[in-house]
Length: 281
Image (cartoon, rainbow, N blue to C red):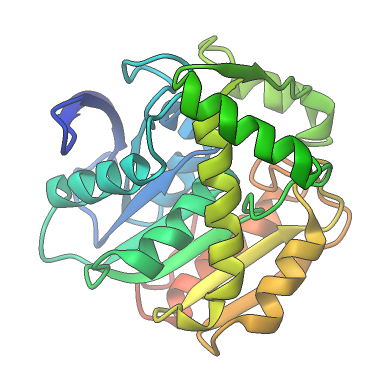
């Protein structure tokens, strides 16, 4: 059962929220899913249904500048707005249930920084996939300094960064199916980019402070984010982080050709940590 609604952010900006509930309306855990750059929460429809079959309700906000949430595409005035919006969405989630934080790509960056900087006692576990800690083709420091200057002078200035389907996953037709709503965009604000850049470095340096069981899955053949940044995170991580590289997989491991195995890995992790009980599909 899928539905959409608007929730207010800390600044009063309406945040579009898509939720999926098991068909019988009953669930034993709640997942907050944080999408990546250019996409939106509803794009995870096919993936969220898998969790619903395991009695997990899934809630996915459209981040600022994305999907059906208002605002210029790809633009935030400050990175912290992403974190504050998540905090407000958390307050809307069903109470008294185990909660899971799931972040992919840019959403993985945001989720890690939420765990490191905000009260996350509501969450019992986290799943992070191919997080944007550093780009595979990282701009030189001189270019980043220029982008910072532009962001200070022109807060809404955006850069076009085209991402083609064939670098997201091997199963291109499946990727196209997930984009059929037509909400995908390729614009990123100068301030947004610099905020993500700084937050990626922060997450790597403070990986040892992750304080809840966390499954970290990195695509082994990622064309978008730097796998070496993931390995740097691994060297700094706390013992609560289960770090794995999925060889041969492209960036969107949940849409790639081993997505069934990826889901089983996630389900086993949640079972191991007592979030869900063993069930059959």
